[in-house]
Image (tube, rainbow, N blue to C red; front, side, top):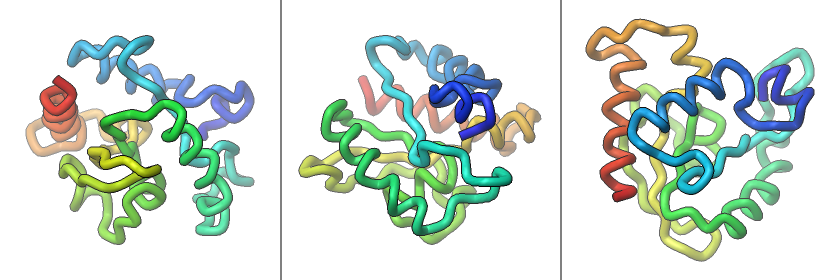
Length: 148
């Protein structure tokens, strides 16, 4: 979580969250009805360092409980830590973003897709073809098609 998210206890409530909302709305997702947003790591690590494997393991039961309760058909893994926790994918996100994975998560087959984290998109704002923002646009359209 970012500093604002950690202070408020609300996932994706800062600039990256606003961008995520805009991306989802751009393909007509209703944020109240169609989407549940959470963080895989619930508290910001000290000095904003990357979470350790031990920390990811610690938060896994919380995330799995959320999956069990919400029961989504599609899970979007925004960023490498969500991808690592949910897919145990060793390759970098630039190699696997936009690819569908079908996995059993909490007793049910679900579709998962890794995507660039919105904070990464804020740091890479170009909309030029082949850049992260344009690739994310292609990915989110594929998500919309799968959802429909």
